[in-house]
Image (cartoon, rainbow, N blue to C red; front, side, top):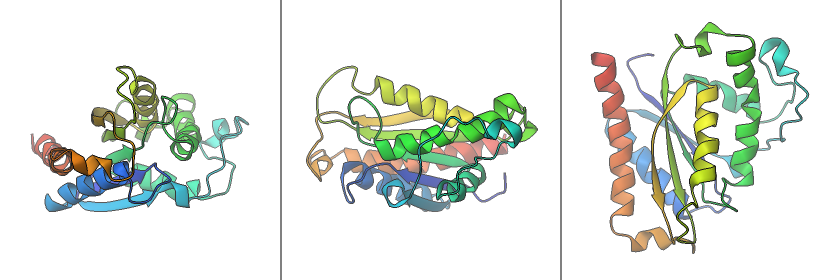
Length: 202
């Protein structure tokens, strides 16, 4: 990793300016305040075809589908920290986020089938963080999404380092009613960068 910390934010909601958008924006602002270079990608603006399970990536770790996922792969691998934000849709991440997650099968193949040293145990370790909101108060509402996100991060050597989750947040902008939510997201972004820097200095 270079001295500059690169943070990639993945906006998984189709609703621009919605609750997870607001939270991720603040997290990226927090990361930038710590001196990180930040970039955000709105997945609903990207044409990402679902994985076909053709196993073409088992040959060389490259997905055979040519679409906008091809510009996301290098960004995942260049990032030191990846933050995925998605509201809960039927106890999982949104379809836009899930399409991207499934296409990371190509990186999974590089790591577990082709044993690419860059993605193995001795490869670069990234950090992953999850931000989510859900409209109900169900105690198990985030479990499925968290499991999916953990395996998404694992495919490209990102350690799942935590999450920021809010229940009973549904209408657009509802998160603003929680006076602690946006400051918590900003603080999380700062902490992710500062913690990474402290680890690199040890």
